[in-house]
Image (cartoon, rainbow, N blue to C red; front, side):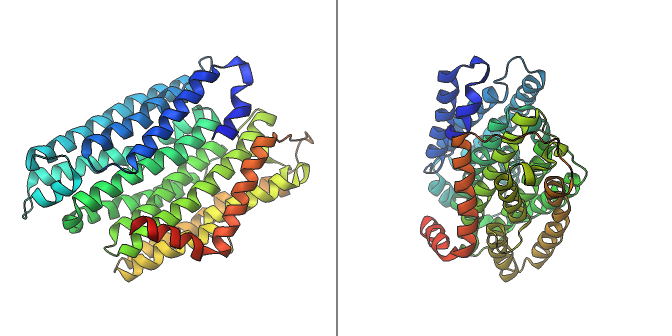
Length: 385
């Protein structure tokens, strides 16, 4: 993110110090949430990520769309934070504790209506942070209006933190009630996969297309929560490793094209495969990986997710996942078609050195994860053991 921001932040004499300070605040929140074992710490970590993100979304103060994105993100984010905090307070009222393991021991054995309400509110609050349907409505407008470097941050770091929070609460605190919350998660997974892919079909703006694509990928990742198998948990980590690299790569190419052509419409990619062959090949790799085609990393991520879904008796989720992945091929190929089958304006696309480094790293990892999945699965298994 710092590499990608180096070129962006030097434009229009923006506030360098504040920008990097806010990025570091988000990084701090992400580090805290990865080791949080307490509801209060989880909430504080989420807000450490959210508040800087609200500001960064409107960092271009003279850009009306950026300001609109920031305000909309802030208002809806505040509502989600309220739901999350209220759900946590109900859990504290039931158990008298905020430690995740102590909550697991103190929860009543039967199905308490207050517990059910708290689970729904916590899932809804975090569902907003990860842009799961039906809590996704902030995502497309915010992604389109925010500076594209911030859009990249929201599509990766913010979602990662949300999934970590959801994982720690559901597995560590509510693990004995998987039969209850897994059904809710399954509904969100289906809605996100279907809605995200279908609404992405008519999109002609790369940022909105990737926003709806991200919603669909949230659905695929949520499938891992519906399985009682421990293997499904490490498959989520593998998928997120894949998701981060192919998304950062795709957004990096989009950022270069947007800056050169002063547009984020798909038509701005016309002829890119010939004006800059390396960017064309890189973007094709990222698009095909997002679909989940072999021999790219996206195939490995989806393979593990669907495999463990079938093994845990969630065959219908795997089938829906495969069908929606086939549907997604259409809108990802729209980008490839523009690059290779539409005539461009002949304008040379210049690539900043640091951005080129980021794209190259993402290409390498997108291919390496597919070629040597065992290495990355070992990392994921050790992280969940």
